[in-house]
Image 1 (tube, helix red, strand yellow):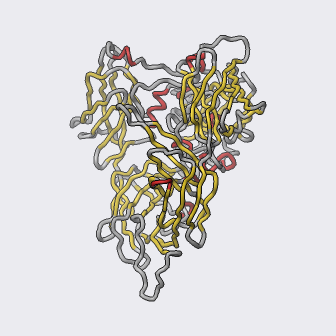
Image 2: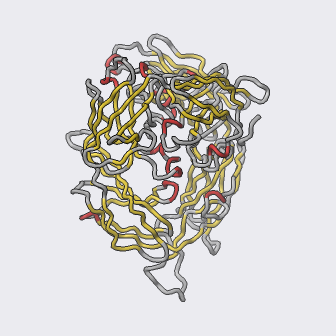
Image 3: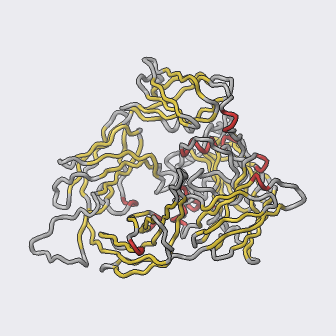
Length: 581
């Protein structure tokens, strides 16, 4: 798999541009599982170039220069703050003609950020907004586009029509064509004493508006209302035009230099207390407890008290799972370690307080194993790293994989063995990463635990978990061309693959790439199996949603990949509104 048609080992700098990660980024290959939270969309078989930090001190510094223009029109925009963020950070301001110049830049790959009041970066034109600076070579004639921004303003009131202050209001861009929950690029504001809010500098487009009152804020009690600890009314997060259901939210359309209005009232709901104790922590120094609601959203959090005690106020009706994040370290200036643990016992809140809970942390254990390669090829196993990625409890939770971090990253030893110590109890998949493009066509073929194949399903961690891992150089590949309704090649289209069955919980099957200047794309190092391949004008990386493949089944190409096989397809572009050309 590869961005811009490269294929092979991932260019982690393209990935870094998406998540704005820079310092000493290392190209990595993900064999068999997505390393979520580090680089969504980077899987087995992408290509790229590593950066050598030790050599950087001796590299020649360079110049980056270009222009920021208004779209449409093409006139230069003055006073734009241009930031380059990578192994180092650089800033400058455009002149009266919109031109900028940054000198003394170290070689590397940088994410470009544009800031100017009244304008917003054009994400369609500036798809990646990355600059690759090569030693001894200046980078010139760059052109970045900005749109005249719009505004959403309005008033938030309570159930009796009175203004509410200090309500957090968020406008979230939505590309409804990609999926009903395909949201990104939020803008935010807060209400004043009149209940008024204003969210500026929004790119033209469609938005969902979401209002969140301050925690524990409740409507005043009626004189005839009995005070009870079992049922309390509180203001709750509400979507415009006044619904608790995100799927019922109305779309607010923002035009360039325009002001859209969204006035609405927040809703109330009965809320309850949830309290108890977390057992089995073993004296961990600093533990945050989260209540995770539907769709994997973390809705409440607090630091555990002495003895693992906790107490949440104003929990809305529903079923929750508890999640622990443990921090330790901060010794001698070292970075802290972080562990994420899930408690599998569901917490049902329905009609009364839930008190006296005793939540047991799974014991977990050490995970060890050994790598083998299919065939007679010799491999330098020290070029590989491994970590563990928690398997989502459901397809809904899989949508949020991009925020989860790998657990216990470690190097593979010269003989192919590895060990990850003290892994929290949960279900995981093995994430395998490489520092070199030698592995661009490899994929993880097999992971066996106790004689059982777990490469697709994942595995539970218990004391003494031992894995037998097989990698193969026979990764499959897909290449092709993206065309519009007139049959013309489409540049910078996003191509995604979605498994149709069997591998729905295996993240590395959800791969993505970009078409190049000829509309060509190439994905390499893929798993064998049946996939739906789609090309989008714009997509916000949540093609793992449960209904995504069904919704777009008739708009892409189905491909059956055999081990080591290659397929060629022509993809018709799916536009923002979810319609083909």
